[in-house]
Amino acid sequence: MSHFIVRKTQRTDRKIMENIKILGITAITDIAGAGQKCTAVAIEYNVKIDTNKLKTQDFTVTGRTVTNIYANNEAAHSFEKMNDCGCFVILELDSSNELGNTREMVGRGPHGKSVFHKAVVEVVQKNDIFSTLGTVCPGSEQSFISDKTVDSLADRFRECSFDIPGTDKKLNYQLFIPQNYSSTKKYPLVLFIHDAGACADEPIGPLAQGNGAVIWSTKVEQEKHECFIVAPCYPTTCANDDFEVTPEAEYTVELVKEIMNIYPIDPERIYGTGQSMGCMMLCEINIRYPELFAACLLVAGQWNPDTMSVCKNKNFWIIVSQGDAKAFPIMGACVNSMESAGGKVTRGSFSAKATDEELKLIIEKLDSDKNNIHFTWFEENSLIPEGTESHPGLHHVLTWARAYNITALHDWIFRQVL
Image (cartoon, rainbow, N blue to C red; front, side, top):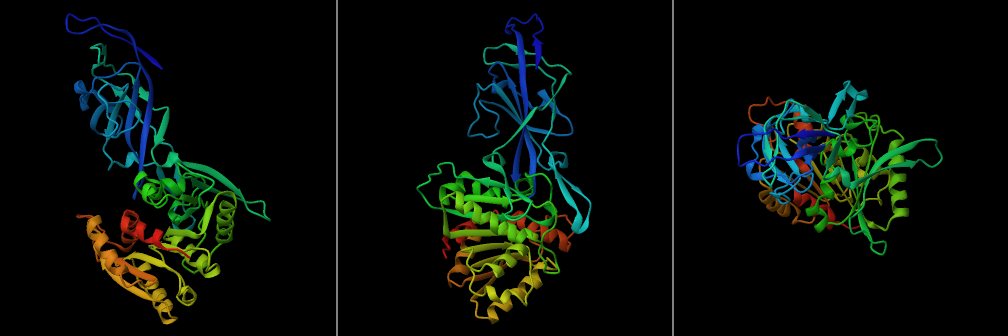
């Protein structure tokens, strides 16, 4: 905590006030398809700050660009909460800067890991700012380091650990419990399984890697589809391109059963979703436990076409990229295998650049035949940003960054019941 003494001035329109203080600096993070990033800073003062007199050039944030500034009555960057008499000054930051990422890749290949860290920002208030009473907090060259972080989505989850029955092992996981949870009501459960690139020792990994877990916890989604969410954290790769899974596949099923024992989960509305490695693990779990999931949203993955035929009656919505060198052809072969065994299949494609409303119409049309298996793909290079060179790996990782934002797929999965 630091103390500021307002400098005396010849101006008669400025009041003098001693001990105007910065009480704390909060780094604000958000999670989108590309992962968790520090997108704003909240600076708390012991007086209410006048929004109308704030300018983006009043502050600097090391390595970042301040894109917007305003006062607020809490440490949150939301125009819905913006207040012209708040004690918090909110600095919104450029979101494209890699310095904002909270994830760092360590190593390459199947044994690579991610390291997730808390966001830290360094702030300087270089110009005078004004309270609503007209008092002045003078600028200086003194820098302040953030002492806490907030994330509007990740903070809604509980960090938990599950003791694997019959072993000395534990499985860390993140759990979301509906805000208005009642023990007398039955709830759906969404299981999210992350990709191999998000394997980490930090339990925050399944949340910070992208929005495959947190998207179901948003206010909009919970108002439509109130549900529990469980997102296990795997330290190492647990499903590979040789169609092999580690014991974590069984541990994950045991975790779901444990959640069902503790909370009032509807056994007819358990849903699975996962990307890449997570998609592959879900395929194997469906083969072993055909009565576990009411439906699965399978993203950017593939499995063994020779064994997937037993899933012919499952409710699957599969989404890949046409440019994904593995997922597109191999998952296509899996779909052919399930269809040959009697599964009812609908195939279709759409542009990743389509609006949510356009995708809603396309998905409703694809689902109109009521087939249980839907195999869909993002067309050609529609996932690739303009000016970016296309390659299969980019198609792969951008699939889930886009797919989990398609609200019509959320609606589809919750319509399914065992």
